[in-house]
Length: 214
Image (cartoon, rainbow, N blue to C red):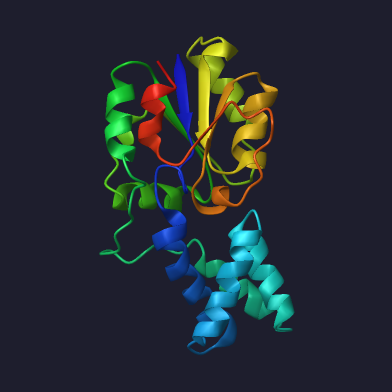
């Protein structure tokens, strides 16, 4: 058996603690001054509707009719290091579930983003990178090759590979195409996504995996 986890809004509460901080910095960079609360709220709402924060920032910048240079300054904020004392919160039960399943089978992390930033979030959440048998980070929103390589590397049949993530198109669709088991995490953007009929399970917290993966 092999279990593959997503990072953002699966193991860590990105939408609850990282995203609000980052989007405020994005607006400051784009506008050149402290944004109004209504502006931040509008960007947050747009971010929830889109699959990626980069898309939301670009769309919001165009809505404000600001220059491409200003939008680019905002985008640059998304992957800048978090403050040294910034605390990233895990989703409930994430650490204990990782510890439990680590003793039973290989567990892997496949996440999308800038490598240093993703690892920094993992560290600030207090999750040791060593708990994973493998960490794969894609800088584009494509996970299928990483999933395929992991199954081959650990010599696990498709029916014995589990993938848990919040975004159905990015995290779960490629797993389904490979005939892996899929678990939808209803967190962050995942709360508002329509559940596809082929998704095997849907959970609101990782401790529910105890009753699913046996």
